[in-house]
Image 1: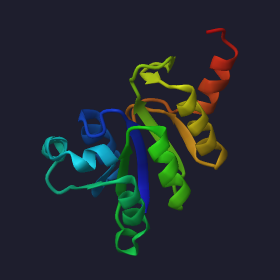
Image 2: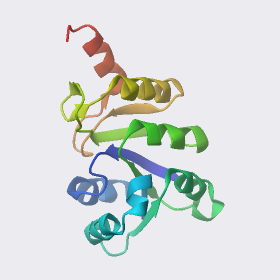
Image 3: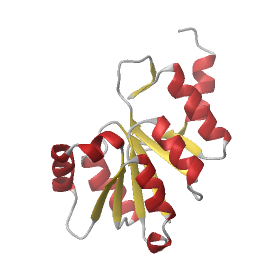
Image 4: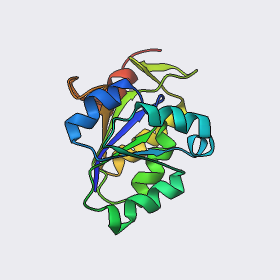
Length: 162
C-alpha cells in the first residue's frame, strides 16, 4: 500500500522526517532513485536522518516498482520519495493505487513555475501526463501547508506572460 508519494530534490531531509512521516504514520521510507541506489555515501547519509523504528529502502525505479507491487509489503505504510517527475511517472504507470503526489520542491536550473518549483518544458509535460492519468499532484512542503494543485498553478501561469 502506498500511503504517500512525495517529490523533493533533496529526497530525505528534515521536513520529510519531522512532519510527513509522523503525519502518515509511515513504517517504510522508499527512496526511488537510480543515482542514489548506486551511491553508498548518499545512502549512508540519508539513513542517518531516519528515526529508529522506521525502515528505509533504496531502490532503482525498476526496483521500486517491484517493491511496491510485492504483496509482502501490501499492509505496510510506505512513503515513496522521488526527486523528479519522470521517475514518479514511471512508478504511477506501473503501480496501482497512487492517488496523490505532494511536492516539497524541485530546485534546478529551469524556469520558476512557483515557489521552490523550477521545471523544464519536459517536466511540465510529464506532470500533465501524470495528472491526466488521474493522480492528483500539487505543492505541499509539509502537511501543515495547504495543498496547491499543480493544475491550478499551470493554468495560472499560462495566463501570465513570461
